[in-house]
Image 1 (cartoon, rainbow, N blue to C red):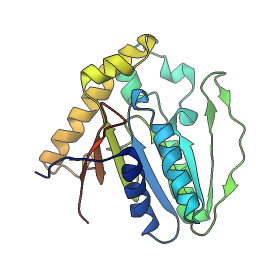
Image 2 (image 1 turned 90 degrees about the vertical axis):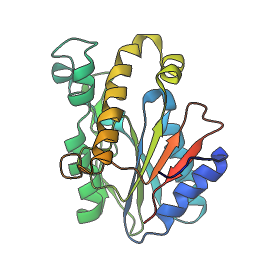
Image 3 (image 1 turned 180 degrees about the vertical axis):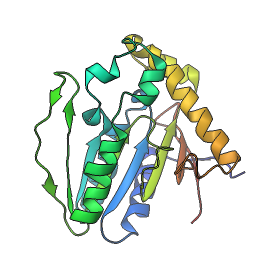
Image 4 (image 1 turned 120 degrees about the horizontal axis):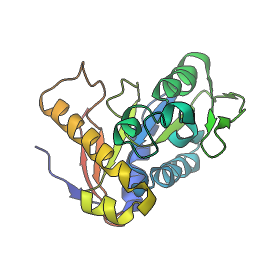
Amino acid sequence: MPAFTPLTPEILTASVADRAEALTGSVCIAVSAPDAADPVEFAQRVATELRTRGRAADVVDLHDFVRPASLRLEHGRTDPYSYRHDWFDYAAVDREVLRAVHEHRRWLPRLWDERTDRSARERPRRAAEDQILVVAGPMLLGRGLDFDVTVVLTMSRGALERRTRPEDHWTIDAVLEHDAVLEHAVLEHAVLEHAGADADVLVRYDHPTRPAVRTRSD
């Protein structure tokens, strides 16, 4: 099993950008991580690095693709199963972001306003020929989403409990269960049942200033 290698945050950011920059045409990156890891902030650093290299790069926040509250909260406001399966509209991410940018050279930056529980009323944006989109949020892998580069920021239960807001602690079990299912799928090579389960870049992220990385060779 490949070992984890300590890296600085700057080198980690650059290495993810390197993987994306090596691909031509539209590129979609997943940064799959619990909110405690602040995946959007990491995605923004990757996008900034790519823009300094001359690539068009934008970030899509998974929290802008939640399902309506009537569906998210059907089984209560703190149901871990609902958080894992019903909270985020992964199908919409596939339709409005991933397939849209590859097939139609456009993408939707936001679908739903989680705070107001209303449509975000955003219009699709035209994509550059070399557009890179960095989609960031919880539990992105294992959903059958066709990302070109996948990054997973993992945290132990202890780190999640320290860094997750107290009112959101109910989400921790859902995140850890999802991680465990993906790990089992990778070990069993269950690629059909859990498509995209194995990350290109797996990061131990208990301490964001001191990440450790395991990469998958192409």
